[in-house]
Image (cartoon, rainbow, N blue to C red):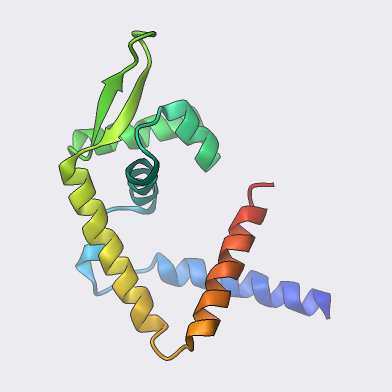
Length: 141
């Protein structure tokens, strides 16, 4: 029985990832890629942060996060805050434009998810969210 559950979870995760990253009719959902959305959302929620901390939180190389943050800075979505104690170090903060794009993108995502879950009972939505959160937390171990 456990093996059947694993097979089903593995397949459904593969399908979820494929479908969630495929083309969509909602053009708002293509303004930001996944990495940009997650970086902007993290900074908007928790405040300015350095690349090293972001890399640790997202389990990525510092060079990868640095490249992603630099692209967002180039678009005007982030700006650097120099570290007063270390002239080489800096943190990133979200700009008004970055916050605007983040909020529009998030709103479009929430609308799409609401459409998909429209006929689900509230209790199933709550359990689904809790299980997804639990699964994502397991990935940090």
